[in-house]
Image (cartoon, rainbow, N blue to C red; front, top):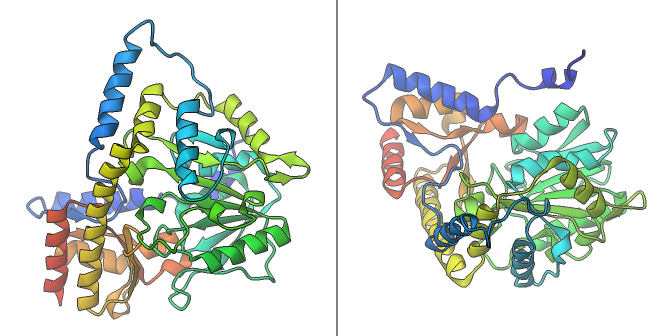
Length: 392
């Protein structure tokens, strides 16, 4: 018996696990000090009332023989897929409900989608980057190349015509940097993908946080993207589903490679390896897109964006360079005094008891930078910013 040797090429500890280990060690040594976590992007506000009501109703339905549901469609119930199609229509994007696949979150599908691609494809990922993009391809043994996000390009790398890639990861609003591509920038990526016969894997998990109406919230708002892009979205941050797990993936019928529909391949993969998201969760997800649901989740998003504003204003006051926070719940800052990322992590933890995420954990271009999350409780965010000011 042989193991998958590619796993041995992974870093020993997943980024956020290492952060947790260091925080727990500090708390054991300093039990009286209150630690404020602005690191992992986990929401703190509860599910919207419309969602809870829909889930309660669905639970009751499962208790009655006449309304009980057993196995559902692996790609998701039609009621939710059609609801999401209607949501896209508001973005002037036309999708058939057969192009939409319900999942237990964007993270799972971003890794699982690789099943339908040959191992010999070259993968292009931005640096810095959400670790899952890199790790899942290392696990598979694919060749990975990088597009460089830097302070000079505001961490929004553009295509290099001298680079040939088959699979391209894009994330906008970006995790970890909070930077957002504009229409012209995304047009350049779509043009590149069409020219090089590549597929864009577009992570739009934070699309609901975009405040500037001129910025795209779907890759399909770019002409031609339906022929070269798969889009992933999640309700984790949009609607607080981090603990209930639901997202969706869009694979257009027009996306054809090697004379084969990728939509059909993904459907075949899902019906073999996935049993679908529970009915109760899907009914809650449907309520997210109702009039009441959209209003209620927007109130939560506004709360988080006010947190982001408070963080950004503090960093401006301290003359700390940063991006993000305006159309994203993440703020990406340059570590003061030329500190490296993990040194700054330790400095904040030890001197202010504030936890963020070291940029180096997101790639070599993240060294010297640091991510703060706006998903905390308002009282904690205010206190954390007070502590940062007191460090000066």
